[in-house]
Length: 158
Image (tube, rainbow, N blue to C red):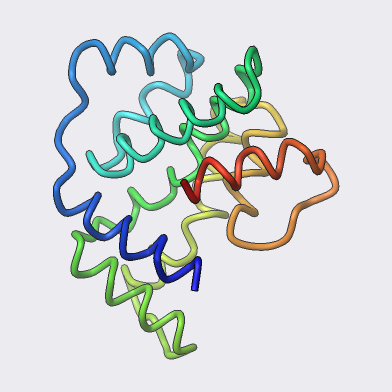
């Protein structure tokens, strides 16, 4: 049930998402490495806002961990390749939940973890950032410490 509530909250958050304000943009720029910034700004407003909220939540749980903040900011980066709005995202999620075929952009959306991780790897992001983007919808990989994984997942589901 926790997953369903999270999805409903995300639906409405994406639906009403606005551009980040200048102060929020500066906050993001201060957290990201130069090669990661362009990737972040290519995301939809809702994904940018979600990433920033996750980074803030991560900072509360693990102060001083800029690597965790970057992982939180960038974990949904692969969604930008699908180019779906809120209804398309909802359709993809429902089809995936029902284990039905997800052609084209719907499939791209559901495979956003590995896609974003590949882009982050190409940009030179550190192992933790790449691994969280790749695996945040599956099991914790060995390269991410259990405590870091808990912090990032808690932030993603706030």
